[in-house]
Amino acid sequence: MLEIGIEAPKFCLPNQDEEEICLRDLSGKWVVLYFYPKDNTPGCTTEACDFTESLPDFEELDTIVLGVSPDTPKKHRNFIEKKNLAIALLADEDKSLCKDYGVWQLKKFMGRENMGVVRSTFIISPDGKIAKVWTKVRVKNHVSDVKNILSELSS
Image 1: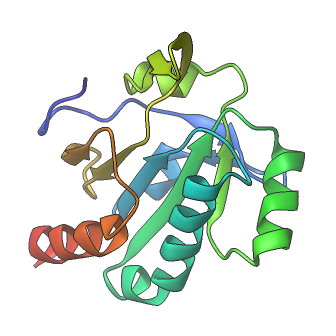
Image 2: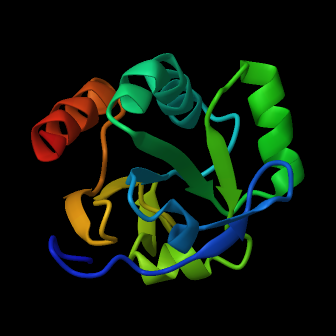
């Protein structure tokens, strides 16, 4: 797992509109990079809606919010339209970014094991370093926790 203070792994991934989003282009801004398992599932929908609802607060803190899952840009676009989301979603179809950030792990569910995304959030500082890490995120109150920490870090 990534540690606070180290350089954030670089990335360039397509968003829901198949536009490439690269970390290097976000230099000078705070970035909330959150990883989630799958579009249109209950926990992932709640988290995406919570981030969308709080987007004005993040924008006040000069922060970009990016969601990442292995879903395709088309699935992301459908998810955004269906749930009226205002955040960008990145398609990590080959799971390379999930692996770089250490969130692609063996998971156990109902007695079965399989590889999947462990819900995690990273705050990346304007100079490209990891400033905060949450792993095995519980969705309830998570976005307000992220806002509070970001507010402290950016002041």
